[in-house]
Image 1 (cartoon, rainbow, N blue to C red):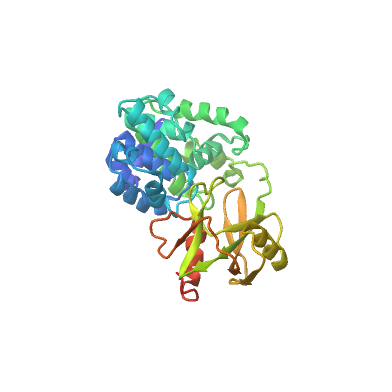
Image 2: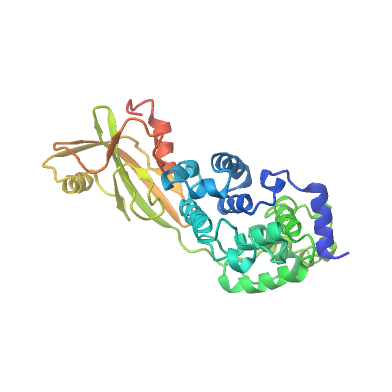
Length: 347
């Protein structure tokens, strides 16, 4: 029996019950795939349901504004995904007559859509024979063929893409792609793979050669950069100052005013920094959290402190608010507010 047949047989018996598998609507498949790009299924499912409830159709998303979309996305991180979704929804609605593209070559032109997402949508919704490559698929293919090509090098992608297509069924293309991803997640796991109950082990070179845990091969990771964020909590009339971020990973989200450095800064430095920033003759700050709050991203670690601040003159730039509900904020801000809300009456 062919590999594709074995995988589809396994899928028919073991596939996960996920809300986006109840539809072939390319809009909903697109939303699910973008959410799952950097998010585990367990967390992503609740966000998918919430997002679709708020924006059930492409038209409803296209006619929304960025603030509403970012509020729905709040907590998922990688906010460029949400901004790209909105941009592409407006493009499809306004420029393509609300008709979602139906081929891989057209889908991949959408902003924020790469090879994986375009392949998933094209195969699941339109049965195009376009294999997907995600971490699970890389791992399965690496083990089956004992591929030594490091999966985190872009030069390896073409090799894996060709292998994936050589195994792919010409029918049930969407099911096959989803089957392979589920199989990698549930059976061919990174640690403790279930080789004893695997129905494709007889075709797997690494199983035959007892080298399963050697694969997939990766090159050593680049050093993760660390940045120090010192936020100030400035209050006036029981309202707190927040500012809109103009660029970076949190573009168009709101946060407390911040000093960003590549090294830990002293209290004196920070007082002088904010004195200059707000053109004030006197600034006093006092530390709220004694230990840094670490916020880890795939490429970056943020080490954050929060300071109460007193400034002599009035601060005009930014918004003083008492209710944060209508302002999308990074998870870091939400975590701080949740942890210190009993100590800070402003929250």
